[in-house]
Amino acid sequence: MNRIVKILTAVLTIGTLTSCPGGKDNPDDIDPSGAPSAATLVFPDNNMECTEGTVVSDSQSTILFQWEAAANANSYEVNITNLNTNSSSTVNTNTNEVSITVERNTPYSWFVVSKSDGTNATANSDSWRFYNQGEGVSNYAPFPASVVSPTRGQTLSSSGNVNLEWQGNDVDNDLVEFEVLFGTSNNPTTSLGVTAQSSIGASTNSGQTYYWRVISKDATGNTSQSEIFDFKVQ
Image 1: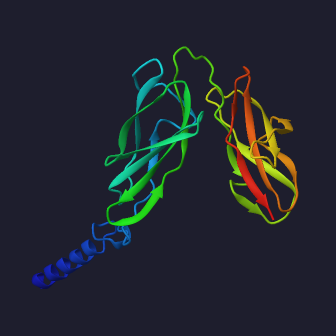
Image 2 (image 1 turned 90 degrees about the vertical axis):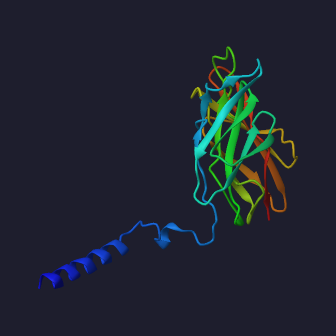
Image 3 (image 1 turned 180 degrees about the horizontal axis):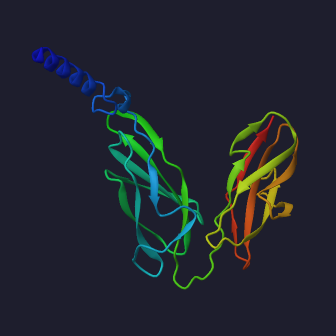
């Protein structure tokens, strides 16, 4: 009788072990395509002033960019854009951090592309913005506004009044107003007005391509200009 009890106990124990969730062989933990997941950014912090880093010169410093390792990723491509000049550069690395030298007293955006040796599929992280600290700066200009709607290159199915929407940020949290320039020229100069909101209406006609940009202003008079956005109306 004792022998039978021992055998039944052993069988139940083996069954429990093989059905335990989260085990190494659990198919839910494996991506059969081998496609990498998107990385989660860590530093520099989003919409903040970066006060860390090694000063290289009066105009440059080196910052350690960091993100969480992504599943199935063997390497990463860091994309960084100078928001004053809209010039971009990339840095490749096999680890989840890399040191990059950037301009001081300058706003940047950055995101990370996860890559895998076993597939051409990639995954992009969110895009973050930061202001690299400058010597003796007490108040920073706003970040250039980013487009929300209509998205860049979007085609609208009908003409009439269109709601232009954007997002503005400032490390000093003292944004006060926006001016929107709008028109059919790729360098718009006609002002739609000044608003404290993050949207404004614009009148459109069929068969036209429209261009617009946003000038952000803070409480101390600092300003920044966004890129020129565009959309089409059928």
